[in-house]
Length: 259
Ligand SMILES: [Zn+2]
Image 1 (cartoon, rainbow, N blue to C red):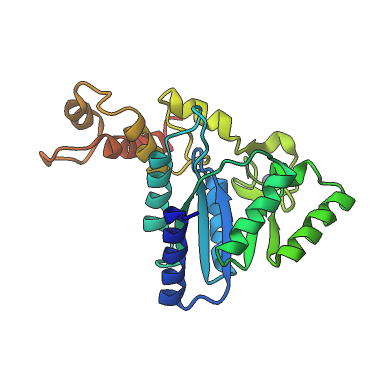
Image 2: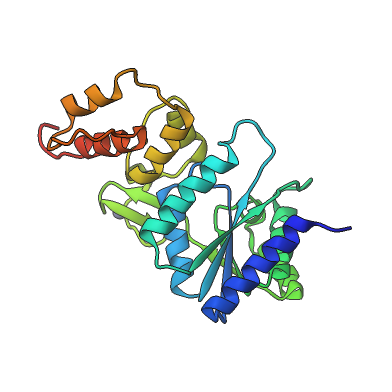
């Protein structure tokens, strides 16, 4: 059988490896549903210790996810504006696994290996790991992956700590659970699907703006008027997009007086 899409992806990866002379290629599986700050942190961590990072962006066949193109655009917005060039490549990934959890992790590892990756990053709260996170079983996952010949690197869970006032790993922050905001995708999705801009500690404003503009096209009857009456410092008669409107609105949310 011939799978043109897979061939195409392998070609894209090879071309990128040649272009960048990457020696150590890392990979990560993301649904980015939606793309949040903890994902950002994982990606930066991956880039810092490898030459190239391949993000396999899942294409789950379920209705309660954001459309693939919306997730792809949001991720691209981040990569293009906030990461060094030629360090990351996004590969679409048809996720049709019958098994999830433990099997999913093994299949991910095989897939990453087949695409030429040296390492796969896995969140410690990954279902496949979490379910089997007692010592014996965890080691059996790594034994399997040794046969696959790919390095599995686990990444701590990140939370926002309201005392540290930044994104921290639960391993490195002394403050308890009750100070932590978790990156719970379903909850962040509920905000977005109801048209509410998530706090920027959860989702970067550029990403939220991109997603909301795609999900609710032309939702404001009088966007230009709204824009000029609410936003300071704009004398230009330039048409503003929905996306720009959300960005400016978030800047107003973040103004630190009168809170
Ligand atoms: Zn803390």
